[in-house]
Each structure stands twice: as structure tokens, then as C-alpha cells.
Image (cartoon, rainbow, N blue to C red; front, side, top):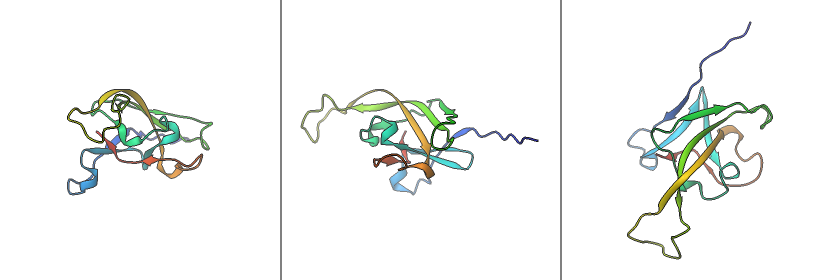
Length: 123
């Protein structure tokens, strides 16, 4: 006998009084929370990613990945700082370019190499 339960990928929003998470979402599939890790997302600062509200969230099974863990993939945007220069501030916001993000189960982060991790993704 095999039990099969639907486990759609969901966006989780924090209570509006949680100031640090305003305008951000976490990704969840079943009981598992996911996170971004630098190693899967270009190694650059993860805070540059933005997940558009209408972006499709896709679960991908990966039998060979960290003991069989699946990942969540999505088309996102990333701030393009190549034209920013040395300025700390400017009147024009950074441009954005398309990017693919990959999220792994939170409980597996920091199992490959040290690096940045992010649970709450700007939306």
C-alpha cells in the first residue's frame, strides 16, 4: 500500500507586526520550510533576489541531491549592480534582470560549503 498526499509549494507570509519580514515570503512544501543558499544561487548576495508574486513555484525531485531531497525552483529577478559603481546611494534604483532561484529544505543548509542563507525572500 502506498500513501500519496498532495504537497503543493506555498508562499508563507509573516504577521504584519513582524517588521523584519514585511514584503517577504518563505517557501513551504508540506511541513518543510525551504531556504536559499549561496551555492545554489550564484554565490552572490541573496538579498538581491526578488520573487514576483505571480512567479510559478516548481518542485523538482532530486534523488541524487543530499540524500534525495527535492528543491523548489522559480523564475525571479535580481538587482543588477554592474552599473552601480562605487556610490553608496543614488536617486535611481538598481535595474533588475531575470534570474532563476533554487531553494533547498531548510534543515539541509550548510551541508556543502559555508555560505550565505536566506529564508525570507523579498516579494
